[in-house]
Length: 123
Image 1: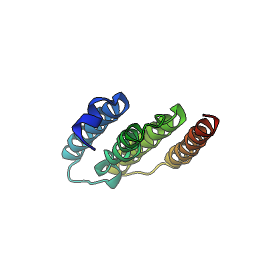
Image 2 (image 1 turned 180 degrees about the vertical axis):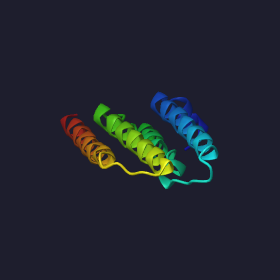
Image 3 (image 1 turned 135 degrees about the horizontal axis):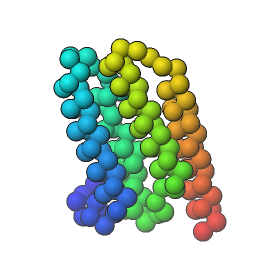
Image 4 (image 1 turned 90 degrees about the vertical axis):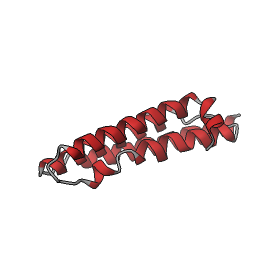
């Protein structure tokens, strides 16, 4: 991942900005959490970095299509579910509905992979 590959890739730029915002947000949230640590919040930045920016850079470098909208939505659903899980853990409670974010996010990611494969086969 070089600076030049990031320069020509608007998807990667957007995911980089989201990654930085998540890292700053989680650092500030952890600072004001009175010593309570949530690994969901600590590693919040990893989701847009590993599932958003890195695939965008590699796909652009390989000359392939960018990830489909389903993939991007899946990453955002996983990001939001992780954020909520972190907030609830720091608050000191758990809520069962947060697991649905992970299930739906994974389904969207799988759908995005299928859409990209079908698009590659057609072309």
